[in-house]
Length: 83
Image (cartoon, rainbow, N blue to C red; front, side):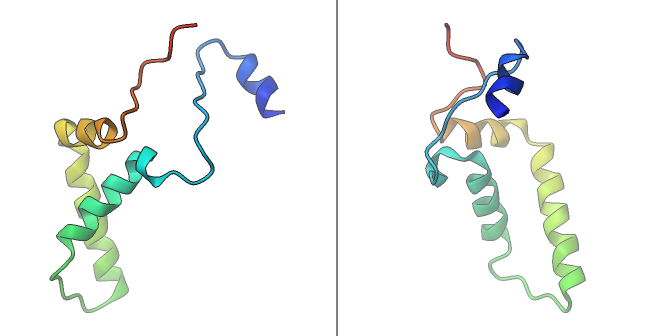
C-alpha cells in the first residue's frame, strides 16, 4: 500500500534508510543539542521541564544554520537523487 501511495505522487521522493541508523537521522542531533543545554538544569516539576524543552526546541527553529548543520552531519541532502 505504501509503495502505491508513493508511486502515485511524482513530487514525493522516498529514501530508504536502514532499520536502525541514528547517525543518519537528523533528529538525533536535535535531541543531543537540547540535552546538552539541560545538563546542569534543576527543575521543580515535569511541567517545568517540558516548558524548558519546548523553549529550547523553539530557539532551534530560528537558527537555520544550526538546522542545516544537523542535516549536513548525516551526509544526506534535501535534494532528490537524479533518476
